[in-house]
Picture 1: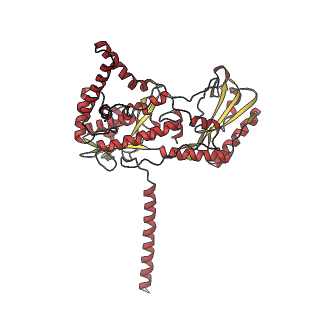
Picture 2: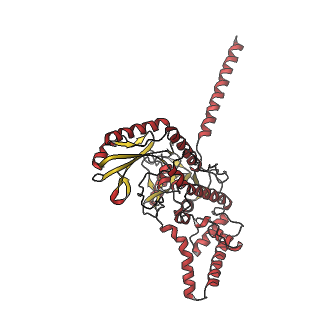
Picture 3: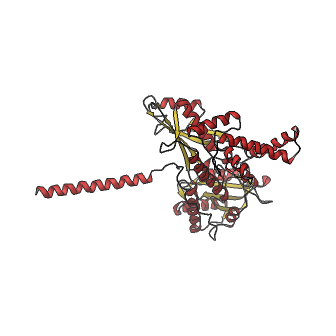
Length: 461
């Protein structure tokens, strides 16, 4: 009897251990992690354009790249059609986010490469970044000298012309959708990520009449809903505004965000709200097919999931742990802004349009800087995270983040490493830059460059 009892107890204990182990494995597999330099780029599907895609969406997906969109690419990641020496020189000139074009920056970069923490763009050969930068400058001067007379004014003009293409992307406005002649300019709604329902009013309605009827048109489940009116004096779509008259409206629900694709329940909620609005305004609504819309939402969500990547670097202490109060003091003095929930600091930077947007974030473990006791909370690692789709390529976010991480490491007696505590070397940054450029190209091909308004909406919660 005692043996049977012992066997039963042993069996129960073994069963509980198996269940606990399985649960631990499931949680471990679901835990998100930052992109590692050795990771392969996740598979990315080409945009699906078939019978289920609306004509206007298909047209936008197949539009050729605009010149300004092409110029937005980081010059440091492109390989121009030069000879072998010039190609290697130009690639090495962009080898580190810490390069600023000055002699002091070159000396600093050489020291960092020796320490094994320099960042590098893809290069066909390996050479000292400082010498490569000097060779690139020499090749550039030789090319300009061969093209014109060897005089001081001509050299000055050639140098100015060489600098202009690099500086151009910084001053360009954010790319906007191409608008055909005579067609109204869009506001927020975009056929790339929205399901659009046109509403045709039998007679003009004022914004004062429309606005009180739009209470249900804010969200459908977790998806944003937008309503715009065609303002004829400006020949532009605009958010419904009091005092303006409209005879055409369009209501749109976002097909996908970081919460997932639009589902049938959310679509039904959206359609019911649109029908109620149309009935109140004596308008006719062109409602889309639910199955087609849900299929488009799933395809868009699949594309977004493949491009939704975060790049992270870590600043790890070489000595005693830091207190949370010390980290907060450093981040505040550096101009980073604490989030409303207190879990992270954010570095903002003004874009070409002058609007301040998030560039990267700083986290100190699981510290909440609003609720935790900052004098007791301590740790030895600071994590900097770049949300790739939400930061414009034109402002070089990875370069800025790595520069700041290196500055923190120097000031706080620490090292800049990856998630496995391996020093960030030139080889690792070659892989990072390759993956990052592939993501930028994928987003631009789809018509939603990183940091653009449509990308900010798609890659939001």
